[in-house]
Image 1 (tube, helix red, strand yellow):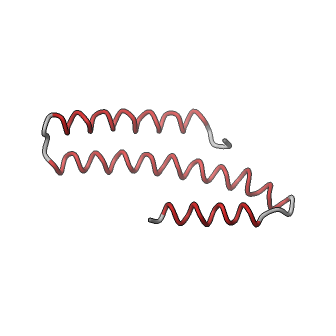
Image 2 (cartoon, rainbow, N blue to C red):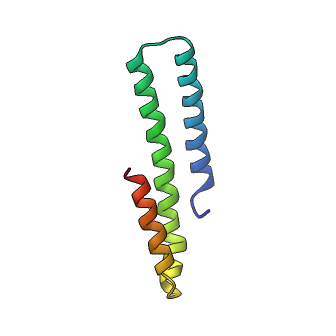
Length: 87
């Protein structure tokens, strides 16, 4: 992985903490909109972590593939990832 592991670890641990909090909210029958807002917040953190990983991949692996003349596979990977991210 090319991304800063400390940054990604912090983001993932934060999301995990939020998910634990969301589970407690569900168990405590908290207000639906409050739960939904927390789910959106956790989702935003996971998306941020994913963007950082993809950005680092592009700056490292994809850049190297272009320099080596082997870019088609990396382009296809990125197109597939963009499709998944936009669904």
